Image 1 (cartoon, rainbow, N blue to C red):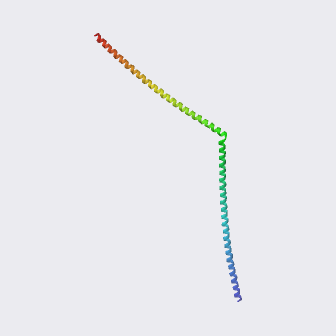
Image 2 (cartoon, helix red, strand yellow):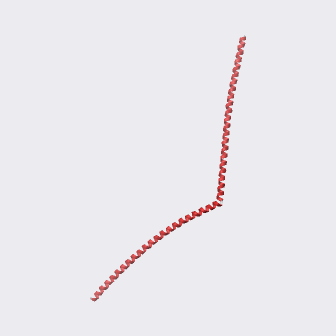
Length: 161
C-alpha cells in the first residue's frame, strides 16, 4: 500500500508537473503573443511616427516653397517699381522704336524708289509712244503733201496741155 500510495503520489506529482508545464507553456505562448503584440504595436507606432514626420516635412516643404515664391514675387515687384528698371525699359523701348522707325523708313524709301522707277518707265513709254505717233503723223503729212504736190503737178500739166 505504501508503494501504491507512493506511486499515486508520484502520479499526482507528475500530473501537477505536467499541469505546471502546460501552464508554463500557456504563459510562454501568452508571453510570446504579448511580445508579438508589443512588436506589432511598436511597428505601428513607428509607422505612425514616420507618417507624421513625412506629413510635417511636406507641410514644411510647402511653407518653404510658398515663402520662396512670395519673396521672389516681392523682389520682382520691387525691381519693376525701381527707377533703374523703368529707365532700362524706356531705353529698350526707345531703341526698339528707333530700330522699327529705321526699318519702316527704309521700306518707305525702297517703295518710293520703286514707284519712281515705275513712273519714269511709264513716262518713257508714253514719250516713246508720242514720238512714234508724231513720227507717223509727220510721215502721213509728208505723204499728203507729196500727194497734193503730185495732184497740183498733174493739174498744172493738164492746164498746160
